Structures are given as C-alpha cells and as structure tokens.
Length: 472
Image 1 (cartoon, one colour):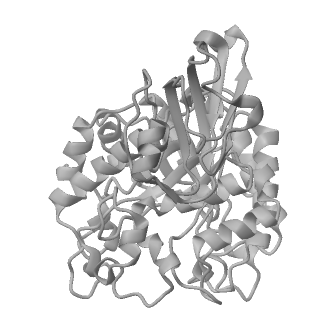
Image 2 (image 1 turned 180 degrees about the vertical axis):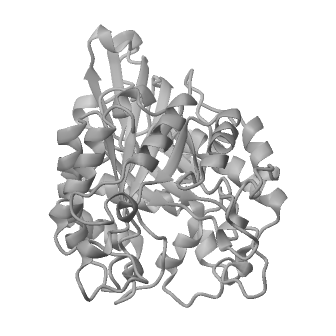
C-alpha cells in the first residue's frame, strides 16, 4: 500500500485536521505491530463498527470482510507511506471541523462521504440496533394483553407476529378473514408497539393438487401471493411497520419439498415488494430470513451461497432490509466464526467444509453482510428475524447437543445485543429474539425451550436480564 500522490499528508505543517471516515472492508487482513505503531487507525480495525473520538484509536488485531468501520479523530501530521489516503473537502453543513475527510483505504473501499447515523437508515424508523420479541398472539386472545405487556415492560419496541396466508385467505381466492388480524393489530397499537409481520404459509388452494400438506411452499401462481400481501398492506396501511417475505426459502421443506431456488424466490419477492409499496409506500419490506445451514443439494442451500444467488437474480431492488437468522448454537455471541468452525465440539462434529461451519456462530451474520457489501448494497440495514439459544436438554432432542442453561441463555442474549450495539452500528436494524412462550406450548415442544418466559407468562432469567439491559 502507498500514499496516493494527490493526497499525501505530512507535507505541510497545517495538514493535521479533524475527520470522520467510513470504510467497508473487502479483504481480510491482520494488523501487525508495525501497522499499529505507524498509524493507529490500522490498529482499530476490529470486526464490526466503531466510533473513536479525539484521535485515540483502540487497537485490535484484524478486520474481516463485510464490516463497516468508522473512525473519528485527528489525522497525524506525519503518516506512514503504508497507508493510502484520500482527502476531500466537504461543505460546512456536514459539521466537519476543518472540512476535511480522510477515508482510510486499508484493503477497503469508501462507503460514503460522511458518517452515517442510525437515523439516516430506513428514515429513522429503526434504531441501531432495534429491539423485538416474537410473540404468539394468533388465536390466543386471553393472553394477548399479558404477552404484549411483557414486551413493553422489557423496554422492547417491536413484536414479530406471523400473519399466515392460509389463516387469512384459506377458504379461496379473495375470501378474506380479517377478524383475528384486526384484533391483533388493534391490541398492538393499544400498547404503542410496532409490528413486524411474517408473511408465508400458502393455502392449499394456491399450491396445486399435488402439494404436500406436511410441507410449506410457495403458490403455483406467485401473483396470488402478491394479491394477498397487497390486500393486507392496504388494510393495515400505516399500522404494520415492516413485512417479512417468506421464511427460510433456502430449505426444501419451506419450498414444497423441491430444491431451493433463489431465482424463483426473487420472483416471489419482487411481486410482494411491488404490491406492498403500491399499498403502503412507507412500510419496510424485509427479505426472508435464511436458515444458517451447512446442508446443500436437493434439501438445502447454505445461506451465503443462496444470498449470492439472490443478488445474481436481481434481488437488490426488491427489499429494504436484508433478513437473516442468527442462532448461536453452543457458542457465545462474540465468538469468532473462524474459531467456531474449527472446533468439533462447537459444530457437533459436522463434516462439512470449514467455511460452511462458520454458520454455527452468531457472528456468521457478518458473512452475509459481506455479500451485501460486495454487491454494492451496504447502505441497507440487516434485520435479524430470529435468534436465540435453547435450553432443550431432552435426550431425544436434536438440539440437546448445543443446549445451554437458562442463566447462560440470559447472558448470551444480552451479549448479542451488546455486541451488535458496539460493533454493527449503523447497519444492524431490528433484532427479533425467540420467543415469548405461547400458552399452548409444553416441555414436549422444542419452541418451549428457546423461550424467555414459560407458558403462563412467568419470566425466565433471560427475560429479566433483557429487561434490565441497556437499550440504544
């Protein structure tokens, strides 16, 4: 690396100036002692997003692809020729003292000319991060107020709720049943919470005569789904804040048992996006949360590969936020995906390639962020549509190998929000944890063990810890 000839610093005695820089890492690199000594910003390249004031840079060993890194401070009067710099004059309206911007190109590309704030993303509709809990209100009128109070009292701002297509338009095309969604939307409004609505589960009439009722999947005619989401968005214009379009389409079991097709999913996403925006332009459209799986072939496509295929199929124009899933499995939220991938105990001895085993860590989300950046989509936020840790130690459970105690679950969930707040601003949006326990779940249900309350609404340690947790 070298100093750009037109932007060389240290030539004049007045070159030192306050600056803000935002960069997006494209290549992994490790900071050496020489890097940290000659230019401290290089030593500040820890994974994630960080703001450093007053020219004092924290020192960290490395930067991984896909991260937004922010620095604010004073440029040194002398700069090592190892660092390439680009200086651009900015108008005073940017609030930059001295009007100088220095973008540090440490194996990276300039993201934007001024530091982004969370208010600039999605028109300030979400903080970074924002806080959501998935609830089970459908058909549970007696416990709806109780569960919404749990969310509200914990200081969370969003609820995620399934609005299943087959429940609303299950009797036939255009035959809508609005009583239950009306009840839920009104109840959430009364608590001054925001709704993230998950839209999926096609009715059998839309799937064709050969569809397996034991599997989920898209309709035969994608326009039928678009018509449904358009009607929903029109009815609840300004009342539902965000829509999730489908769930885990990279799994065959969510795609009519067929090999997952990102190209076909993008066709579905496009029609749904256009229908929602026509009905409610201010609503946020979120792409489907993808399963962090290592399986491939006819049964699944790993999420990173599937996302690359989505971009290749033109998905970029048809979502406002990228949906991801972030199960932590057996590792703490701050665990390095590369370290997790190399530890058989943390990956259940999975024989898959090491790069796929990164999905056993919460921070695998950063790998998906890298795909966004590589496709020029870094200005959008990421929505974590499901994440959590399970305490399911039942011997017959497929989740028993990565079960944690209730106390550890509490620690990890709080740690996930903390890590996101400290490292992923401003690109992280809403984080929706699972679950406020449904009143119908019992210890025989796997969802029971992911939950932060019990079926009677009694808080578990995780709920109490999240309630006390600092919010942005």
